[in-house]
Image (cartoon, rainbow, N blue to C red; front, top):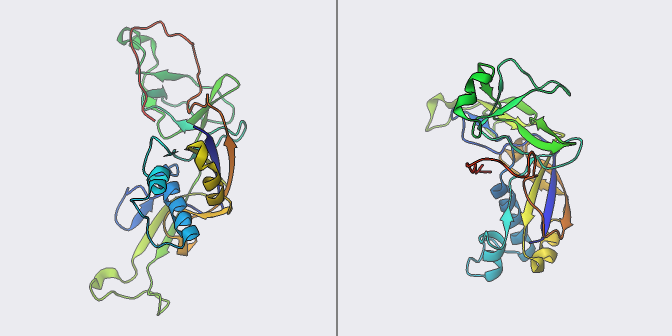
Amino acid sequence: MPVISLNLKTLQPLLATSFQGDPNSDVSYDYIPGSMIRGALIGRYLKNYGASELDLTKEEVKRLFFDSNKTRYLNAYLRSKKGKHRTLPIPQSWYKQKGDEFIGEQSISIYDLSIEKDDEQDDKPKPLKSVSGQFCTVEQGYMQFYQPDRRINIHNQRDRRKGRSSKREDRPDSEGAIFRYDALDVGQVFQSIILCEENDLPLFEKLLTQSDLWLGGSRSAGYGHTLLSYEIHNDLDWQEVQTFGDDELDSDDIVVTLL
């Protein structure tokens, strides 16, 4: 499959809502889901054809948007600042010694509890703390860790016509409701991958031509504007995960890490 790499730079805070927290708050994922990118391209596809909805019986529509054997939209994860690689989420099994912090270029030890034997537990420092929530990539033989910047904004609910806070007839307690948005901050670059059929490349180039792309929720409130750029790679050997460590593991165990 040809590989299309998308770079999405946040020009405004972005809310890829993850349904966390209370009803009056929106908390974004640490990444941009591939399904959200697919939805944005569906919108462009409809606009190009002047249609209001997709024709699900059309072979092209099924191939481009609903057949994962033909087209895949991978999540947009934070892009590394140095090597400009697409990072990946850290496995849940990775731990660090409590008290060790990711500061600058400082190196720390990481323990993968999915492959270390029980009889080695006594040799590890205690206590250990999970490092999940970070992202990583291999750079110059080392595992480099990244974490997206976030922005928290507070908004007051108001009546659009009156221009001020107002009660809803069906909700007498709604006046002055406060909303808390925990979004991805501006100025960050996230990279997604689209795997597609070679015959579909000209169509994708049309869908990706416009550089301004709006994603996520609360767009009318100043969220979701991204700057889109892309590259096409005809790389038959492309892999999502870089190989690191020993090429051959002297072990009877096989560990499968879900992305």
